[in-house]
Amino acid sequence: MISRALYTLALWISTPWILVRLWWRGRREPGYRRHVFERFGEYRFAAERPVIWLHAVSVGEARAAAPLVKALQLEFDDCQILITCMTAAGRDMVKHLYGETVLAAWLPYDFPGAARRFLEHFRPRAGLLMETEIWPNLLAACRAYGVPVVLANARLSARSAEGYRRWESLVRPAFAGLAAVCAQSAADGERIAGLGAGRVRVTGNLKFDLEPDAERTAEGRAWRAALDRPVIMLASTRAGEERLLLDALPDAIGDALVLVVPRHPQRFEEVAQLLGSAGRVPRRSRGEAPRPGERGYLGDTMGEMAFYYAAADVAVIGGSFAPHGGQNLIEACAVGTPAILGPSMFNFAEATRLALEAGAALQVSDPAGAMRVALELCADAPRRAAMGAAGVALCAAHRGATARHMEICRELLRAAARG
Image (cartoon, one colour):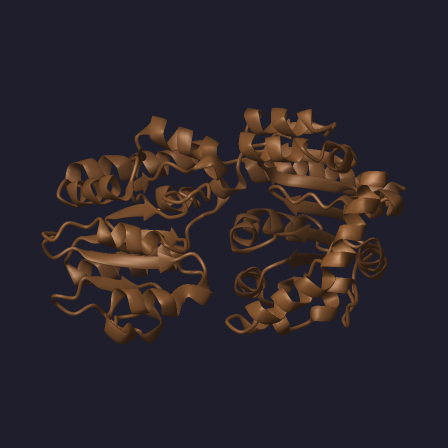
């Protein structure tokens, strides 16, 4: 109790800095300056039907939740799905994916009063927190209001688990208060159980259940065929990685095109400047096609990863050449695009292991190795085809996480309805 009180005090002390940070981030992403009152538990819209609440902190979690959201909508059509986010890009992705079929809002900051106001306003029948979102005051309020909460598609690296242990007196009651944990792997489940979670079940990774958009995939393949040049995709890159990877390209790359798709939309202009003089680089958002001799192309649209992966001969996965833990390689595997991974993939440890064992991905130690291997694969069509087929087969073999999540959701929601 004392630990949570001190944690709450620290939050209150940080409030001015939090507000300044929202304003600052809003310079590049105006969404951060909208609906700020929601971040303190005040909402100006209401649900018309009973609510099932799902929290997806940002873009990756919002996309990963798609098969689960669809399943919940089909089975519990008497309910509305409320999806909360913390980032502007995540909220934009929710609107892009689901339109008006779900309610979208900010999750309030973890103040006790804000958490109570959120729960009293929406009165959710159950909550699902995607991946690793542990908020001590929010989970304490959920227990007090009788709202069962599932940690869905849960993952916890050894590094993150060690960090949580430093604050064990604060986080152990939060983990213990979860109604259930749906872990991506046995190792994730063991680490989460070690922090106090009671009911842990290994359900697999929801991202394997994501079906690539067929229309976007066909469009990407047609784009690549019309281009008639090798395409190396730098996928979901983080700050600083583009320069590292581009600088690692040898001078002699033939007519290969480098397609760069940054992870965060607020960096599109920055990357455009990097790729071309004064930002003059062909861009997807403008419907431009690369001209002969142009070596760079900017993928500056949201929700089109199936197009980009299908347009590429090989994908170098971002977030893995700086200590960020990598980005989602499963999307590349699902459309049959060979993936090249850097050394930092701890956020996708199980998927990385499976992809490497299946032969759908290769892991290298540095940017120079990544670009060398990418060029080798561009020149080796049979090897690319074999890796692509291995990726598609891998995804097919590991589907089913949605159904396993739904078994637990069904049980909790029925129990909540009874009592």
